[in-house]
Length: 92
Image (cartoon, rainbow, N blue to C red; front, side):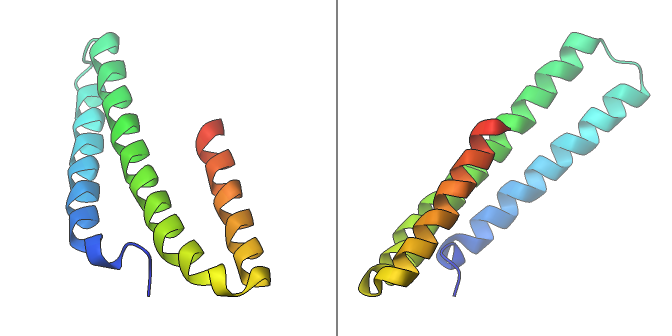
């Protein structure tokens, strides 16, 4: 069971909305929209994706990591995964 299972539908709705935003950006580029307007939309999509990522990370910490607390080796593995995920998010 995934840490986001309870919120799966909400995540899917958010991701579909983001997908629509990306298609809108493609359309803007195709129609030679003003570059600052395109960049504004790219920033909005980036923030939306970061919101999804943070929600998934929060679910991972509260579900997967918390469940692993009974076994130190598994806990260490889950914490290392979470740390690596945070590092990837910070670099992006």
